[in-house]
Every structure is written in structure tokens, then in C-alpha cells.
Length: 173
Image (cartoon, rainbow, N blue to C red):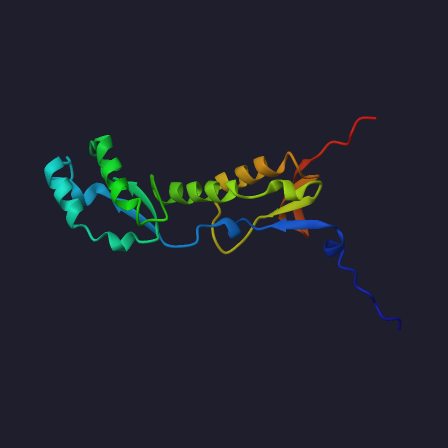
């Protein structure tokens, strides 16, 4: 019986797999909720708020990504968010307004901004679809926007089973 030779067609296809998990935030993700600083969970008293912030243990946010939010329906003056950010900015990796999902999306966008899409010039790229962590939709849209001007094609999924997203048109004769 002749020896069968298996050819890895995926390996020979020239496809490059791009795993968005590589751009996932590395480090702690924390939420700073203003709810605990409100009087009767309704209003913010400036003097009390400033005093409470001065006694807050900020080390919990050291080198973390932090989203500032208020989880109850209250009127929060804009300066309150700014004041919290001024305490967090020197110690946190990044600070923004929003919830955890918005924070993760924000970090993805920042991480993808440093991505060199030009290095994928005329390549066939598969953006990995499944993984260990949930990737926000914004990351998929952003990577598509970055890659499209350069690549020959963009696909979604796994190299053995892809969904075509974009294919560069052939030059007109």
C-alpha cells in the first residue's frame, strides 16, 4: 500500500491569521462608581465629595484601566467626573467615562491604533473569530478599517472555515 501524503492546504494558502485577543487589555480593569459618594444616593455634595476623595485609598487603582461611572440615576455635575479623573490619572494605566464594556472597547481602539496595517500589504488576512475572551464589535470594525486599504483580502473565522469580508478588486486593464 502506498504511503499517503497529507498536504496542509491551510499552511500553503498564504493566509495570515490575526488574533484580536493580542490587543485585549493587559492588566486589571476597575470601575470607579460615584454611587457610594452620593448623599442618599441622589445628590452629590461638593464639600463631602472632596473630603471623601481625599481619604480614598487610590492604590487599588494602581496600573489598572479605570472606568468612571455612576450606577444610580442621579444628577452628577461634570466637574465631579473631572475631579475623580484627576486623582486617577497619575496612577492608572488609562481612565475614561463609561462602563466596563466601553472601557474595553476604548482600550482596544487605542491598542489597535498602534497596529501597523501597512505591514500586511497585499496579504490574505483571516481575523480570528473564536477565542478565550469576548472581543467587542468595535475591535472588529476597527481592524477592518485599518486593514482594508492594504490587504488583498479580509476573512473572518478560522483558516479552515472562513467568511469572506473584503477582496481587493483586480486592476482594470
